[in-house]
Image 1 (tube, helix red, strand yellow):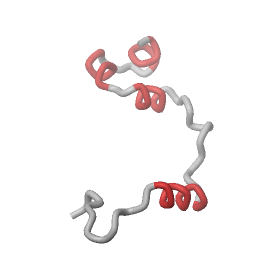
Image 2 (image 1 turned 90 degrees about the horizontal axis):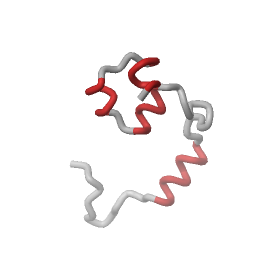
Image 3 (image 1 turned 90 degrees about the vertical axis):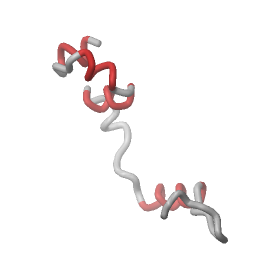
Image 4 (image 1 turned 180 degrees about the vertical axis):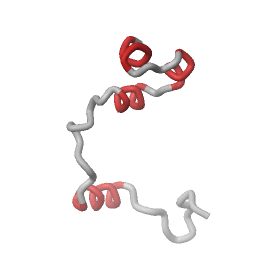
Length: 61
């Protein structure tokens, strides 16, 4: 709460509307822990979560 309201100057309603990940991002935490997604990382995600085929729905239009 101190980081959000005192250091970041958020109003209480703004603070309580944040997810923990959003608060961590705003506070500057975790930015250096992960870099941008590499091509190899993208390929791994595509292999793990392929688009549905053969008439399946992929959530798109």
